[in-house]
Image 1: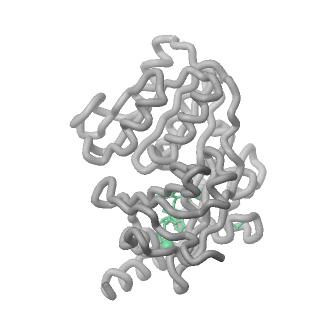
Image 2: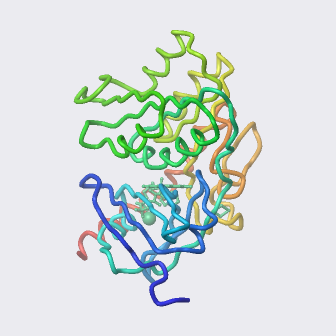
Length: 279
Ligand code: FAD
Ligand code: FES
Ligand code: MG
């Protein structure tokens, strides 16, 4: 392994709680595709966590990840600076986004999901689709990747929960308006909080608009060996990290995913408290 493998080339805060890291990983960058993720360990005492690649460049030999700092590992990640190195990085993992010319695709994203949505919009646009992007956040200061997504979209709709920018309300309100206006929509792609993806899937189901969602089950190895990330799709057990992370939203059991993602809440809280206390 070369000395600067997994070195942070650039580190920046997109919002007070969102960190973007560009990492030297030429072997991953040359194979990476939209929708795929990496498993990383910050230091030798750390756990492995999955993060989607928000960008990748085979020419530069780097990948970019964007993390919402919600717990011990993502907060630790947020302390890294250019020149630091990750302990381990594995990828690209998971099935890439299916890149077909569907016609008109509506991509819907919320919160940290916007960073994950960017390479998907870019790739679907390159595949010849007309791209309508609907992006949302709690307020205008938390809207990330707006400029990047706008550049690769034919139409962009911005929503904020507090009305500080664009539509005052949810991304699902805008999608509903487009559906009610009988706009031509051949495919919908949604990424963001589980509740948002569930609402979008419920909205498109009666209209039979195929809807892909990007799921975030708890992953341990990320390569199909432990079963931690199992999800129920169409009544069958699927392995999130190798069969997904993208699935047909009309067939996902969102209640099961929500419950399974809460199964270590007590331990996560203790871990975060001891990390913050130790800082
Ligand atoms: P913790 O306090 O340990 O956990 C907070 C919450 O995060 C938990 O309640 C649980 O719901 C979830 N979580 C915890 N551990 C894991 C784990 N090992 N795997 C998955 N979820 C976990 N987040 C981003 O900010 N940016 C991304 O690009 C991104 N991409 C993801 C891609 C995939 C395929 C998956 C499955 C998840 C992705 N996530 C992403 C979620 C991210 O992995 C978790 O937020 C992170 O692991 C939390 O770690 P923590 O120690 O900071 O928080
Ligand atoms: Fe272990 Fe998917 S994370 S099987
Ligand atoms: Mg954790």
